[in-house]
View 1 (spheres, helix red, strand yellow):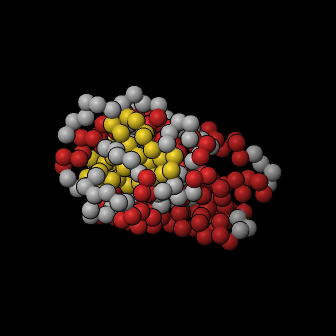
View 2: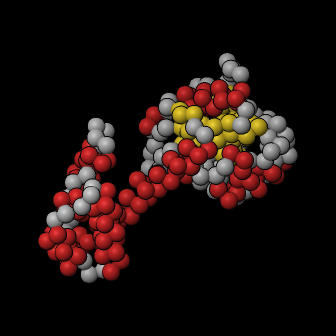
View 3: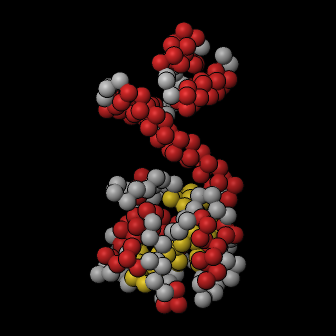
Length: 257
């Protein structure tokens, strides 16, 4: 299936992913967002001059693809409520099964592997899209949607996608929590957290050319016992001590210390 005409899509949901997708697709020349649904109309009402906004599922219009950009828990129920059948309905979740979409539809996944905040601009050229479909013939249109955004697409299976999502929690959510712990540590002594930002950027940049294993540095890798003990004495917060010990032991085990 190859679409030479404009691809018509409907977005369902009003969270961070839905909002960024609407803005990005709305700016393309090959994709038309013909409708945007959310059960709370107030959340999307400000876009009513740009797209038809609705809060009634029975009023959904005809489209080539329906994108369920909703929470994982809502995918199955929402897709079951759709009154039509045999349409391409995709969700944007990294961890939910392809089969979360109702079996009465053509099922697929259009997962943008990135962190989204409504207040932070996103360039979709830097967002890899993981695509999956139950039927082979539905893949081309998902590829075209990714290309319309300027994104690189990756055809993955469910196990690979779920592994990527799990890994993303480690590299994004857990790492950000470590930034928060570091912020608390610097604040406790009146030091500026901003002084650490060049280090944060260099750490991220380093894995462009080195594997995480080879990029590892620090007292745990060196098994520098004096420094490790000093750090643990400095930490007054037990929670911070636990995190330090856990990660130190993990690094030591990885590097045979």
